[in-house]
Amino acid sequence: MSATKLILVTGATGYVGGRLLPLLVQAGRRVRCLARQPERLSSRVPAGVEVVLGDVLDAASLPQAMQGVEAAYYLVHSMGTTGSFEEQDRRAADNFAAAAQAAGVQRIIYLGGLGEDEMELSAHLRSRHEVGERLRAQGVPVVEFRASIIIGSGSLSFEMIRALVERLPVMVTPRWVRVTAQPIAIGDVLAYLRAALAVETGNRSLTIEIGGPDQVSYGELMREYARQRGLRRWMIPVPLLTPRLSSLWLGLVTPLYARVGRKLIDSLRYPTVVRNVSAQRLFPIRPIGVREAIASALRNEDSSFAETRWSDALSAAGVSRLWGGMRFGNRLVDSRARQVTAAPAAVFAAVERIGGATGWYYANWLWTVRGWLDLLLGGVGMRRGRRDPERLLAGDTLDCWRVECIEPSKRLRLAAEMKLPGRAWLEFEVQPHRDGSRLRQTATFDPLGLWGLAYWYGVWPLHQLVFAGMLHGVARAAEDRRR
Image (cartoon, rainbow, N blue to C red; front, side, top):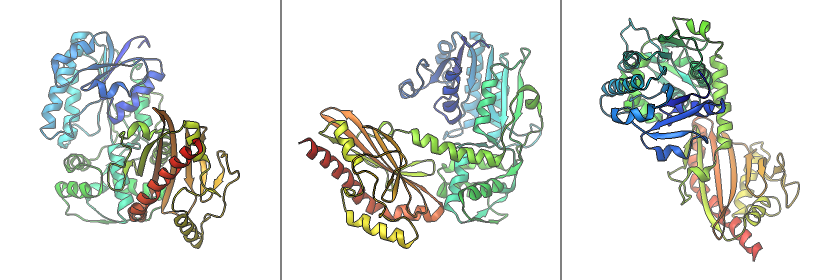
């Protein structure tokens, strides 16, 4: 399809749609997004993307959104709804297909779920297949991809695996943990979705099963995740754990809502493997295996986190919203901010002098105690000091930290090198603000298993004292220097 033709994306606020959108823009595509609340999406989409008001459950809102569209991505579903998600999925698909046919859309691209039609499927998988049928019913050619578990930081299945492995040294595992699936990395899913714009269909619909090269169970996925994270986990199989009890159990130890967990577990009771290999013939894509997919998810999470600006994501008050801080994937975040009546350069200068002879601006004796404890555990302690009393460079040691990133007058990120049950970072951001600057300080911890979580919550009350005092101390030093 021509790059000048307009593409409609639904579900741009979701996991897959949100990742697909910038890739389409980078490829030079003209993109329009359908959103129930355009004001929430407009500020987050790449430049040049049109955001229009519309809802797939409101047929009257769709004709205008479809005008001039050549291809449309259908990436919405209703599994998280409190009502009948099957009925909502039917109505939404009927509305969308009818509007696409009336507007002359040439192709609908849809992401559904694996599972053989001849088998007794869960309500969720049945609904996924039925949506594909209803999209095809109006005559618009549909390229339907059917995928099993999608592995990527932030995906529902991956986050469930992560939470179970990180939090439970011993797991009681029901039968669905041993059912075979064929996982696929999110990067490969996105490659298929993009390639669907160019695949030759002969003006007919295609149903394409996609998956990675490995057929594994959820249990094997959890063991591989544990191996890559350096965690030892034991799994005790039990025959009597119903989907309802399993969903309640998941609700206690994972981020899933119990109702979403139950619908997901209903689907996990059935094998979801690729039976039709037409994807290999139609697309020049060779998906990566499970081991590489998990490693990529963890690696990309580091990159995504490094690019995140908490000043954009947190409230103006700048305080932690939950006891123990916020979450970003597996990471725990404690972030706070304050106004400083000094220019950004002066504030950052105070930040850059932190550590060494200057100290940590508050409770230096606690930092000294922490350093001695670290030495007893075989760590680096606080004795390394710093290379220069005024200036820092990327890679510099700074007491028990190392400078990971520095942007002059803007940002300093330190990575902890002390002995910890996980990884830790301390970041300072300075932005211009009326009457001076806005200083944000963010402490982040990537806990390693249950001991990591226990450490974070154990020292969290102390962090409230130390980090709040440090932020105040940096601000006061900048204002004193200005005066």
